[in-house]
Structures are given as structure tokens and as C-alpha cells.
Image (cartoon, rainbow, N blue to C red):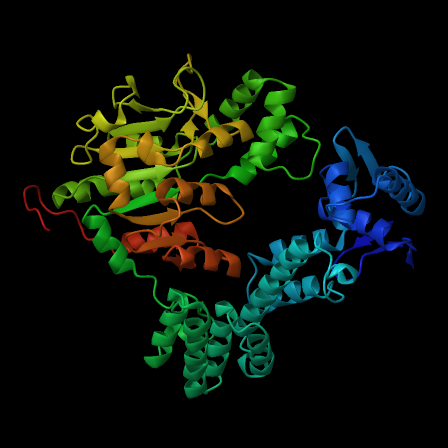
Length: 543
């Protein structure tokens, strides 16, 4: 059994003994391949990383020698020659970084002591600074920063789990040291404030906030993010939600605020897709050969190797089989009678999913929908089409003039930003933004305003957003935010429901002025539904 390590000095162990990896550049070659495990690294990139902008004439020959020596040292079949370069063929469990990532993921649904123990096991794999012998090498610095961020994020998760277990008093010293080393890291400061507060040191908790605010204002010119400000407010009023067993990042989930905006017709729910699950099933069906089975990569592989026809056939089968409505779909389908009774406009719902579960939930509720769906293929590629309740489809060629056909005052509108499956035998309306090529075309457009009907564009700019089912693990989220607002923050207070957000995810949402609600989706919509009033009698509009 061969064990590769990058969470510290670069090492290889075989059967309990460390392998001598040779000179510095040979070790760097191995490090570069390990950091891109599962992908081929081009010779040009390796040469550039090893020698910089002025490589010697013998650089390529030297690189080939390094690879040859590595093969002798660690065995045949591990460093593989590909048409595009070299690839290291190792399983995730053979690399300490892979084992670390797997344990962090395993810890996500756990709670308290069990979660803390799993994260401690993950963090125990770190033997010092990552890629320790290459600290000052230009090629290694971005990777070192990335790995250090992963470590710090896992450390924050472990500390939060320890706090859930009631160990606040013994964590204060560790948190104080970490905040001193990372003074601008708001999540660590929040954990320190919470540990101090739970230890009966309320004044020190508030002082920790003031120290952090002063640093942020003086050094960066910004105020603390919403989660830190809300935690300070909760400490000042001694909110019971801060006690052990309650999640600290979101002292109040603002159900009344969300419901009030919903009943005014000013909330746009944004539904995420299970891109990871779809990618996994597609990869299994077509024997995708690499480890990084993201949906765009797998779909591009299938389209290239098998053709777009087999790709669409399989996507159709997979997506159509998963069109059973869930609690979120049924909650949204309950709202139209309530909105009508109050004289409020119907919902505009945005989704990046491909299936028909939302439509089926509304059909079961006896509610009509207008569907506005992106077209990714064919002569109308890059436009949106409008599917009326009677099934007729219209390609929207002039978005600036397409207003009267779509009116939230009449019925709910679903904006499908990534296309959808077509259940009819002809499948003429079927279209998926799914391959890398599709996303490249998608990114080439500056925003939805150029192709979405003018009335919907205005609605997107003047509404709160409620993100349901998105996380940073799905990079569609970042693409979606770019499509909705570009580099601009959202204009109205918005919310993201994410049960186990990482510190990176919290920071992502905070920078976009979106509050994170740490609940499971089904639990969230159940609680939200409990805050809804009963429908008003017909004609008794309430504003």
C-alpha cells in the first residue's frame, strides 16, 4: 500500500517505510501531480512551475527524467502519460488530502461530540504547514493558501462542534490564540464571543466584538458582517438562542420578516438542483474515467465520446424519473390562493433544476403556471421560450417587448435558467445547460437582462431572494449570482437556507448581503408554513 502526503512536507510511504523522493524539483513534480490528482498536468505547466519564465533548453528532458525516476521510486502505473501531459493515478484514500476531505464531508450531518471527534481525526492528518518545503515557491503559494483555508475551515467546524458539546470554558484560550493569529476572520471571532458569553464573561465577549470591528474599519474600511453584528445584538439582549445546543450563527430565522415579504409578492424563491447526484449517476452510466465527476465535466465527456443524442436521452430518463414533488415544491404550490386572497401578485420562482417536480406540485394543487425556460440548443440557442398553461410554446425573440404575455397578477411564473426536460413524446422543448460548452455560451452573456422578458427583469431587481438548496459545492450558485446581479450586491434583504454552511459559504453569503438560515430545507418550509395566515375570504384584500 502506497500512501501520499501533502499536508506537511511532501512524502510517500510504502508498507510503513518512507520513500526517498530525490531532489527538490523531482519532489515538486510529484507535488504538482498530487495536487491535480485525477487530471493530466501538461508538460508546459510543469516546466513553467519548476523553472519559471526562463527555463533552460534542457527543461523538457529534465522533466521526463524526473517522471522516469518517480516511476522507479513509487512503482509502475502510478504516474501515467496522457496525450495532454502526466497524471498521477491514485485513489482519494491514498492521499492524505483526500482522506481529510472525506472525513470533513462525513462530519457534516453529525452533531456535537461525534462531529467534533470526526473533525479532530481529519485535522490530525496535518503534520505542519502544507507543502512545507515549497513555502516560497511561486507555483506552491496559491495551493498553500487553498490548503490552509481548508484547514482553518475544518478547525472552525471542529470548534463549533465542541461548543455544541458544552466545552466553552476550555475553548476560550484556544480561540483567543486563533483570533490573535487571524484577526480579520469573523467566524473565529464569533466563536470566541460565544465561548466567552457561555462562560459567563459577557463583557469580554462584547469587547471581542468591538476589537474586531475596530480592526475591520481601520484596516479594511468595512463594518463587520451581518452574522457578527447579529451575534453582538443577541449577546446584549441575552438571547436564549445562544445557549448550548442552539446554533449560534443565526439567532433569529426571521420567519415573520420572510412571510411579510412573501405576502406582499416581493420574495423570489430560488430552487437549486441536485447537480452532484445527477453527475454521479451520469458518470456511472457512461463509465466516466476521472475522479472529478462534476456535472459539466461528465456531460462534456459523454457528448464528446458518445454524442449529444445519448447524453440527452440519458438525462431525460434520469430527470424524468425524479420528478416527484418534495416539501418545498408543495409549500410553494400552497401560496397562490393565499396571495390571491390578499390581492398580492403571484410568485416568480427561479430554478436551475431540470425536472418537472415543481410543475407537478402546482398541477396537484390545481394551479396554472407560465414557464419561461432557457434554450441551450438548436436555432434559438441563447433565448428563452414561454410555455403557456395550455402547453403552447413561444420563443421570446424580443425580450424588451414581451411584457403583457407574462403577468404575476394572473398566475405564478417559473423562470428556468438552465432549461428543462420535455415530457411530450416529441421532446421538442427539451434543453439542458449541462455541458462545459453550454456554460461557456451562458457566461458569454453579460446577464439575464439581455434575454429575459422585461417584466421579469424588473421583478428580479426589486425583490428579496430566498435561496433553497444551494451550497458552494455547487458552482452553479456562483454562476447564478453572476447572472442575477453581476458583481452588485442584492438590493433587498435576502436569505439562504443551508443546514451546515462552512465558514467559506457563510462568507460568500455575507458578502452578498444574504442571511444564512441553518436549517434543513424541509424543516424550514414547515416552520415557515406555520407562520402563514389563513387565506382571506374572497374580496377581503389585505395589504
